[in-house]
Length: 222
Image (cartoon, rainbow, N blue to C red; front, side, top):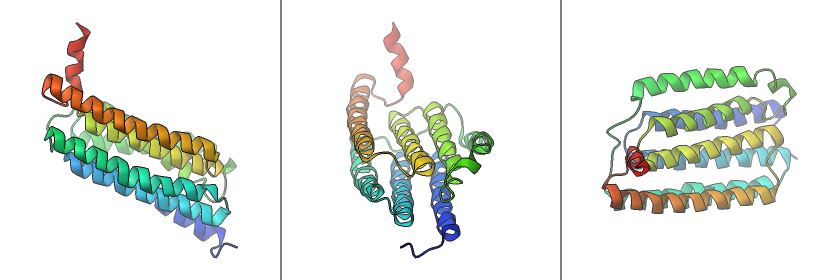
């Protein structure tokens, strides 16, 4: 039997979701690639803790498995892969961006407001425990997508993709108390494979163009 009443549990879930959103802004404001990886790992820890709290409050045990996989794959394995890629490429900072940091943070703030406006009509129909997290989940997805556009380094774009996946996981937890276990296992496997492919692709990009700036890929059109 849960030790916390639903209002307190809902507030704690909202707090965890807010911490995930805060790490998104920290990633957008950060130029150092290794720091972006560390922030993604921290975000994944917050996601796992939030999922664990939902599992505890609802009694849905397969969410515990998803939370454990989040810690292992997203907070440990993938960050190590990305750190090794950064060391291999010897690129520590993102010096050139399509959109500078102040403008990016402003745009992210607008995206958060848009997310809350979009989800406002459907929030009352959601679960009492996690319904307020749905807007934050959508905001995280939008910020991740924007970051993929605003940054030029392949490593940062990969982190942005993973942030989007974290937002989708939070959204699934908020909307339906988690996806079926077999679907979650498939998603985690796909994310791990994507990280491995991204590492290979980034190395090949460095070998070919002596840079990890994806803008150089336009040269392949000719």
